[in-house]
Image (tube, rainbow, N blue to C red; front, side, top):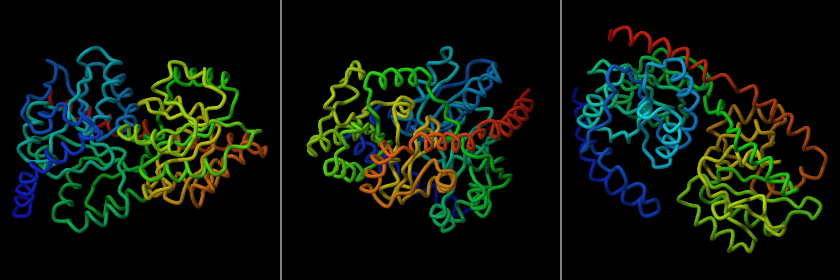
Length: 435
């Protein structure tokens, strides 16, 4: 088909630009230069262990990798004869995947970067990794990959699928390319009815609404126990600024400097940027705002926090369970810039009511439901959110808000098992076909 061949040419031609992009990202995050050969196919990809069927799961970055943990754990427990190949596109996703792999016997969970989407690279990847079944998480719809999987008879599932109206409009502009790609999935497991409707209009077949596995993120019990000890040692309430994005920290730091916490509250602010490459930058912002702070990475024991510390910078990876368990109130990052908000379920499940800004399109229904139940409130801007967080600590409403936050979080569980029903069926079908 002429249009498909045109896409082949474009993606091959874009490979030099991909190299430029990686080098640019590496200026702030040198890890982007590691495992370079995997991205461009100049290495042998991990082959399956002899006699072991393999599930391949692709989670593009940190959030998707963490969200997929429940699916991974459930699958590997249910099918002890199977191995797993986990791919991603970012260093933070790879780091999270490494933590998952270390929980299993050596070789059972293997990792590599997914190569860029050209026919030759995707064909080489599939030929060498030989998956029994492939799962792509959320929005990872790559036309060449899907075409090459079809040519090799590798069934693909789009799991935890979401499709915003903006993304759907863009995809429709390239319908000649994207409709065959969406139609190439054997099963699509959508997060919401709205996602399902948009995915069907884009050509997806066998679409089922299962909810989001991001809401099934399992808290790390060791981190929760550590947070309990730290809270007891501090004896101070905690306001969590969770997963903040570019442009949001200055808004809150100005508000904190202009309106310090009331003496009767004596709260600690725990500020956790979304992206690790920004940790140093945010530390400089806190210092410039004139606030006393410590970095999590420099504290051997956070329980020994000095009484005059106003801000703890959460510059660590994989500790969101710890930070959420510390919190009395959570201000949700990503919602005070035009980023659509980050996931509010984990802090709510830990009992921290959430203050959400005006941008929440990534979690629109969840935010609506949280507000309706009373586990969250919408805020106009960062200044209003900071004032409300301080007020909640002293106005006698916090215990009821906490109860409602946990009630809300409980209504959003079960997506992992619903998605596993479809994954299980297709896995067993493909497994029997290869024997």
